[in-house]
Image 1 (cartoon, rainbow, N blue to C red):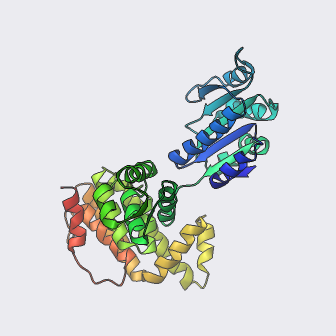
Image 2: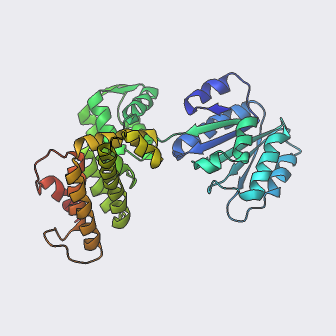
Length: 357
């Protein structure tokens, strides 16, 4: 069965545990918290022994059945925890997992830890067997738009609260780094008593620990979040992100905007392009917003500008462009994020250089 992380505590409280739990997803913190809750319930149910198998590289999958069948003289029930960091067990591993899932030993509780799987792996026979014979916990990434609510819930656990303004500030400081977000929340619990936290208290205590993935930037750009996109560019540059990868991610979205205008000009709905490009629903909506905001000639000129940035990144000259390709990339992102803005070589953009000087 499929089990949402937020439903896990209620599931365990009913006292009927599954024989197998598979935790898969993007957020290591939430996966470990889910596993901690399952282990605690298992200990209460008499599972006093635990053995961990790290299934990486050339792992011998016969160890899985051997470990499950080798009960200790001092423990009648045991937990077998299998960590599969690559997410792909291979043919032998897939068969071993299928057989193990169907074995049905009530004295062995299996915990399988996986990263988020691609569609092919998620629909494989071994993954479906795990879901059929146990519980599959799908741990989704905590996106920026729901992060304030997540932070509010964490504060409530330690009997603290905060205004919307404070929660937004906390979200800006901790976006993309959930483990650090929890640590900052714990710090606030140690520094201040229960009650409402002020913005001054939080700004004094909380550090900027936000982390951004390269592919967070195109989404912010398409959504029109100019200020957040500029912060992302500065952070990515400071962290040493590869400019060609960032440029490729931005260029692909500019091409998608151009194709969107072409599809509309041909009298077809934008949804046909989304199907052709196999877009996930969220990206389709973001593309609609960008196509409505960025005119076709503007998008075409921005794609040419991306070609100039590519030349600059390779040490070549690009006439009429800034010598710093990151500043040029920031201009492209701003032009997509807020197409109606006046063209400014603004201090906002120069902050990118200042942040990384």
